[in-house]
Length: 216
Length: 121
Image (cartoon, rainbow over all chains, first blue to last red; front, top):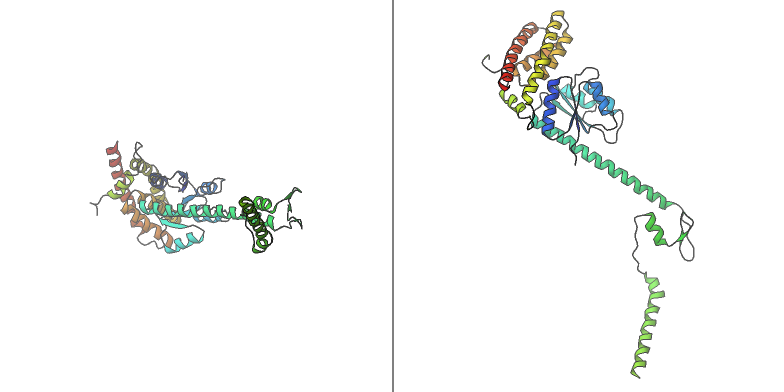
């Protein structure tokens, strides 16, 4: 799997460079934003980063404002956002998480802790992507089921089904094409009595007659 | 207190180890960025203090705190943290002494940085 891209948004070059170097060492491709407005633009683009580390106090938009604005956009695969800031009071942590951030790390970040938290983010993003794929395939399956729920014209005598192109098809053919159902052929007890047993008995008496003839 | 290095050797070591093979030393790069960025902020903080603009003092102290923490300037980081808190609470007792202390500590950090950079080149 291709490692997820990480956005680092901070107005201080020192912090940006240190955090960027930690992420690169851990194998993540990194992009940078020097203020809140550019961070928002990166998150709001067609191909947003999977994970973002946002500073709190930045010129223009502050970290929590960026989070709030992007969360208002309702994406199926939202960016995992970590606030990375020198603000270290509980009230700040609560405010940041309430704004919609997924996690909160105080500066200066310990390298191992930061990377561990980013990899938690990667795990969440992976799950979210898998879930979105699953929802998509379930929706497709549901559309198929709906196609089968419509009224099917069936011949009262031979049980053929008229398909959408106005051709008469065997039941097996129709269902194989319109669902994931496949058929295996067998017989029910009634049909055994009606068709199979007489055929077997006819075969048996034919064999007996043949034997008798041979013995003569 | 004065005997302790202005920059935490463990943090410096961590930064040095962030350097990818065959690329320029991350520690030197970061220290140079610090020298580019931070004196202006210290200047801004002192001007704001002189002008009585406490919110601006707090903002400058806050951003200095981030940069100081990243290079392991522990004492500078602590002073900036105190000024950040003072700025929030608007309780100015002891603030004047802290601003002076910040300037002095910044000089120590500066000296250490220059020594490290010249040793590396």
